[in-house]
Length: 294
Image 1 (tube, one colour):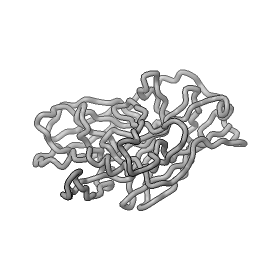
Image 2 (spheres, helix red, strand yellow; image 1 turned 180 degrees about the horizontal axis):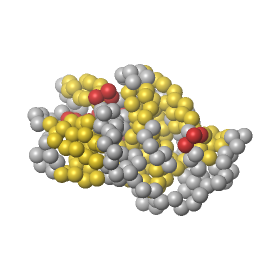
Image 3 (spheres, helix red, strand yellow; image 1 turned 90 degrees about the vertical axis):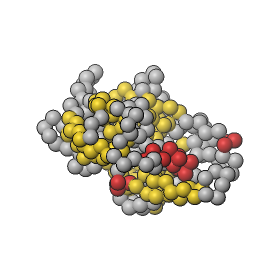
Image 4 (cartoon, rainbow, N blue to C red; image 1 turned 180 degrees about the vertical axis):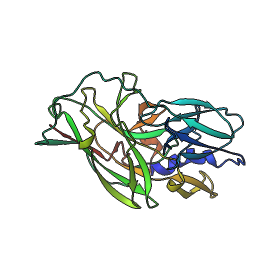
């Protein structure tokens, strides 16, 4: 399973670090910001804030700056201190056009396949996402509004949480516009679960450049799960802290449509079958459907 391979990167907290950086992330009105990303600059070492906005980050002496970000707020770079209070300012959006037309919800079209398999895409650290891109083309451009999404998750624990993100990309595949302005946290049951999310109240239009539907990983205590990993070429076992849930994938005969997003840049993932000789078909797509209406 791809998820087990990806757990190797989660050794980020396995190093012996005694000191802890403690802090809180708030808005300008002193309201706590839950699930904000607090990560050492240009690294994968980080956490997300708790529901009360607080966080604890292992202190690494060689790293001096953290990047703090959350949907709807401007990203900040902050010098590391033992006790930190971080205030984020609301992000200012520039509206290029005013949409007067409203959906009638008379007709709809579903893009993408929804298929459950053993292949999955697990957590790769703070401020990272797995996603699927949906093109706007001649077969769907008459459906101008996003009605909802369907997707599958797998989890080894109850009530694992993941953050939904929907955005456009520029020509360099950098995140251009977030189409959901506030956090949407989805709670996942243990085991296999199908999710149906109604987005009609968000008034999201389906842009001509297409959209990415992605899920942001959350490094929080509620998502922790202890895995046993057998080291390659040995019989030695190692305990690794992973973070649930994972997104299920499947194999299609068309081009790959699995995107990994880190530091606001999306990269199309193409797995080489030579590296997975025992797996047969490599899941090169994610079980996500986009429901459009007119």
